[in-house]
Length: 439
Image 1 (spheres, rainbow, N blue to C red):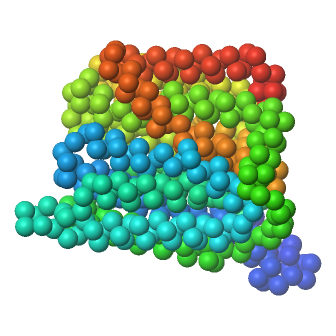
Image 2 (cartoon, helix red, strand yellow; image 1 turned 30 degrees about the horizontal axis):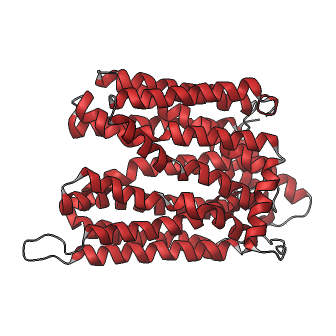
């Protein structure tokens, strides 16, 4: 039987049973979606995925413009680091509370609040950057950019646990792995598309125009959240926020498989993830490749990430996750170590592709494992602990790498950090039966 014949057969079967044409079309709907995008057969997830894809493109457009604005204001790499730190440090402080709120509040309402807040901040940044002084420079100060970045980071840190906890409630359980892979794919596609569009938009309408377009992009995800048919949630238990937070940690301590995954995430985020912030350094100082070379390195990393996400989507079910997360984690760290010593742009591009591919497979294994292992009542808190480890530790890792770079070569410092992370990953696998049994 050919694929093209299946919808007709489904319609015929429903017609025999006395169904309506609408029921027949609904029954045929899942068959029209290829395995690689199977989760999109769920209408709620389609809305959610599409809205977030457009919004993430806008976010990357803003990131490009914000970095350029800081350089216009200060011509200082130091301030680039300060503003980046201001935007990311809230993940270390507020994400845990975002997980507690995610388990206690209506997730749709919480996401509407956080997304609206980020939209307002984007419009505020656009307005402040639009007005210029007599010298033609924007009147906005770098301190105001840092303050808005900090507030945006707080909103994002409160948003992340609810965002992740919502996905399993929008798809069938057998589609969850595919949904997580498609989310990863859309994020990494936006990482490629957003900066490209941002560069053209910045040339056409300036940095303020980029910020304004990002504000408009939030309308897509807000529209999706309003129109999603949200599943009924259990009423949360009445307890204090601190009691809920302690309950999340107590639950995690009793789940050995998730506990070891949190420690692996922490090792990756603290010792491996900061490498990505130093790719511009390698492009300029070690490879002497200039802006175009940096673009190719980032594109290769993004391409590897997208290919990995689509590979996971096609596979559908990730088996032997404990072994996979270890093997691809070691591959990720090996690519970083080799990159740190490479003086060839072509070789570095290959290593960047390999780093992007291995990194996304590893992170997908983390995401799928937490989503499957956590109970519905505890999922928000578990994912907030995971997100804190994943997004809250890289700023500290970047500070560690910066301090080490004062004493040894930057490439050697990052290679040493990746080596320690690889050793920790191997040790976790050798000494943790829970990780080895994770399937």
